[in-house]
Amino acid sequence: MSTPEKTMQYLEEHIPELAESAITQAYWQTLASGNSVLESENGVIFEVFPDGKRKIIKTTPPPTSISIGEKRILR
Image (cartoon, rainbow, N blue to C red; front, top):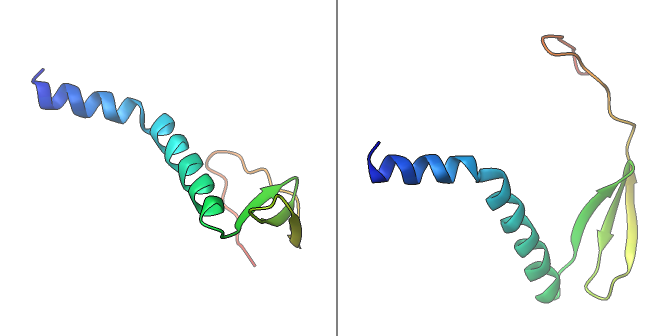
C-alpha cells in the first residue's frame, strides 16, 4: 500500500475522533467570541450563552425507534 493510501486510510479510520474534536473546538470558539450556541438534552433544545445561562427554546418529542430496513412516512 502506498503512502498516500496509508494516509487516507488512517484519516478515514479517525473521522469520528476528528469530527468530535472539530465540533468541540467550534463550540468553545463560538462561546468565546460572545455568541450563543444551541444544545439538545433530553428532548429539550437550549440556547447556551457565554456566561453559562441557558434558555429553553423548544421541547421536542422523544425519538422514534426504527428497525434497520423499516420505512416510515413522515408527516
